[in-house]
Length: 283
Image (tube, rainbow, N blue to C red; front, side, top):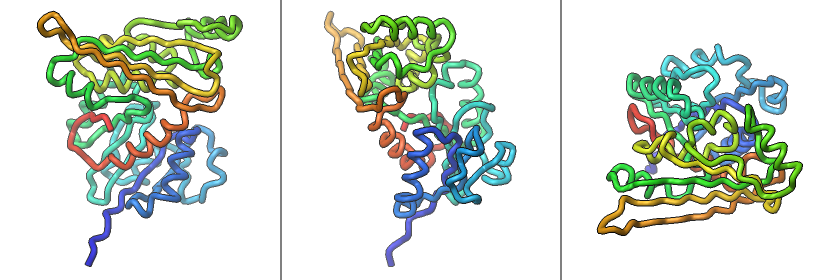
């Protein structure tokens, strides 16, 4: 007799474009993959009106009673996709890894994962070659990592001092380098736009958010795609160093912060959340 796949209950916190896509995938494809949608929460309750009432989580305070005693505890305001198998080995997926740019948040999440034996997964999103980056970092052979993200000016959701610079780029209508430097200070300025860069910092913890170089470019000549260029430099050996450069062109609707292929990457990441113990793991 063929063994039936174990069912995993998935809860979605956040119902933007990506959340809607994941909900659609869970409802249509989830059952055949052993996944079921447990609940959905959104900042705007009315956004959930099209969903069946039993799937709507009205308030985050209801999460422990909805999810059970093994619900992962995470800091307020951190977007999480809880994924819990029936074997009561809870795991969570951090929908926006830019949250880890805050050192205090990263410490609390890592401590919570280690303390409870849970896994906190970080989706790779649009990051290409993350396994190779992680292997080099682990071996101590990764010297430098630079991630350049190029999008149309209207795709950026900038805050703080970066906001007027984006507005100026929109007005100028020319290619503009908005930022180049360490990743950490960039994350709170455009948290919706640089999750791929944050995933790179997780893949290379020896470099981390302070060692990964970020370059953000506004370019009106690419209105319907996001371009991610990853430049890897190894520690020199014998006066020469391995270098690898990859460029990913991700189709995207004008003005959207997430490319279409990235949605499918997140869906693959959800399926990979099967529990790896008390750690933070890229998926």
